[in-house]
Image (tube, rainbow, N blue to C red):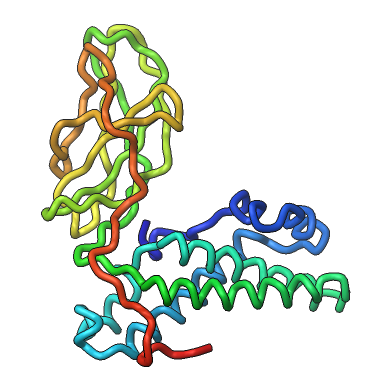
Length: 255
């Protein structure tokens, strides 16, 4: 996924690092989704400043960097960890400052140090960039038409595809129950400027969607599931891989 697609982590992901985080948030009336968003915003500004500090030879889009911001930055495993740890540092900072409760101070300090380490590891691994960023798709519009299908409940995800074959992050899954003697129809909505088509992933559960079209469906077109039903396609992915990396070195700001 791209950094601009949304928060790299959700509240459930935070529990991997801190099992009590939901209880702490409830007790201290802290909105975790809001803090996740704040962490993403702060990390995005940090990464943008790092990219601006690089010479044009390091950043292939340095001349457009102020305009595009971090729209081409890919979320690596290292960046995902950094964002989770930074979020937890923000949460425990707020929990401590709410009532100056000393039991939260060690947690704040711990996650502050871990977030700093997460930043360092992200920069050491490299900030991943793509040449043609394809945003995450929105949930598609679903319908049904008369046919000879067996019917059933189908879960659908779509991805946008660019002219160079790059595929963006998938939409959230949405479902429709199709009557017998009908065929499922899928249409991707609100295409980004970089998209030339979309892929369709369908399954009988939200976690088993696989590719159903042999080639991208043109923007504005629709995909109709054949009467024969689902095929065994490749599983849905997580979005674009980086085309290049901006790695650590003397040009990087320290902090």
